[in-house]
Image 1 (cartoon, rainbow, N blue to C red):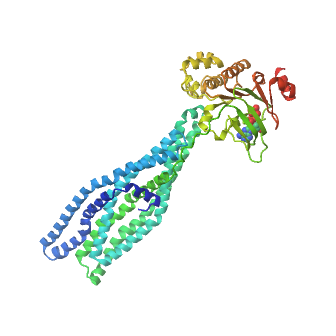
Image 2: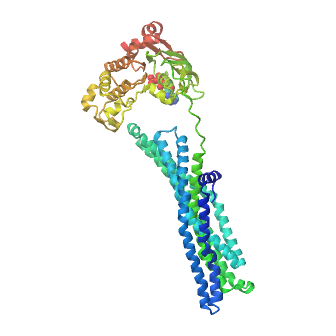
Image 3: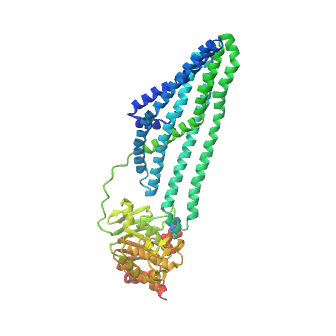
Length: 572
Ligand SMILES: Nc1ncnc2c1ncn2[C@@H]1O[C@H](COP(=O)(O)OP(=O)(O)OP(=O)(O)O)[C@@H](O)[C@H]1O
């Protein structure tokens, strides 16, 4: 079997301790192949010393001896099965344990579903290895050992005939081996693509609600479709390599028999080959050698190839270094103060920075409004504060800890970002509201709905259990924003950032929702859609050009002409 060394090492590791079962398997295999070894010789004797010598009873006696050997071979076959099971079954358990552990480590940074799908893929592969190894040890072993026995028998019967057969079979095996590397590579690609389909589909199934909410069904279908097409392409490429069976069968199966027939007059005349020996040679070729070659090239070839590739794949999975010991959790921030220190950010290297040298301190519990003309970097700042964007220079810290050093899951639970585009998904209204706080009680739900001004909509829809169809159904844009604001209200995150999240609300509804979120406690950062948001805030950050200005409404009215102009413009 040709396999990558790690695959062989993996197999050897899991077959360790099975030496006694393998030895018994080999011993019973030797008994099983006795008829194949002796068939040509005994037939030659039966013909030459029996039937052609007018001694039919002698001929029948030789054939009887052959029949006895077939019975012994059958006994050997029967005794093989328990040792086959004793070899393969325990290997499966230890292999599954090792590859599943390794696979879970390998993909633990993905979604739980992807990890589950990956683990289930490799479990299937480990199961396939067990089945393939069982079949290989049962059938391929049998036919190959019969082929080897036939070759040995042929050598004893007629060395010149054996030489011709060996030359031809050797040539066939050389051609087969020359293409084996390509076959292995292409088959490996098929297995990899199959895994990719599983992983891609699992990620999409896990996020199916998000796919529906974002109307991304076509894109999701395209992604899976691409994976399926890639596997179909890999399968076609692999199928083409199977054409090599034609020359291999020609050389290994048909040529030796033709050579025997063509050379027999010559061998009879020059080497004293008898009729019985020609017939015995034909028996070795037809019943021993030919099935061995056919099984090697067809079913056995595919089987051994699959085994080699599966083992190679599992060896790759197992070769993933053990994860580093779980690091002590990063020091939890002592507070939820947010600070930016000389923050500079551009969307591309060499592009004009959107924010330059911005230093800002937002104490825990502050209600901050961020205002400024369009395009001055308000949303960019929100994304920097939440860690969605990384600055080229400077740092963003939360409670003194740089945001990239925080555990991403912890960061997501500490900061809620509500964007302008409302995320409302198919499900009940309740599902949508408790998305960030699955254990919210009915009272908390009612309080949130009432606080942000969603109660009327809930009544109109028929209560919290009303079904929201894909795309949001009859909910207006403003109502969708209220749903996301109630969701943020329920969220336990101590920092909430609204990025123009009230743009579809009228001024009164906007004021009510914003005030509710400010009164709820925690830090509230409002990327303002209207300047009135600034008037409600404790602090205002005015973004305009490279140097931002921060201060209270009154202070900015006194010191910033732009701010005064924005307020004046809004009130006129
Ligand atoms: N993904 C991006 N790639 C490149 N440039 C971007 C990207 N996002 C935003 N920009 C650019 O960065 C600048 C700041 O954009 P940003 O959205 O942060 O401004 P804003 O103040 O929030 O604007 P608005 O009030 O109109 O929402 C703009 O010039 C914008 O075109």
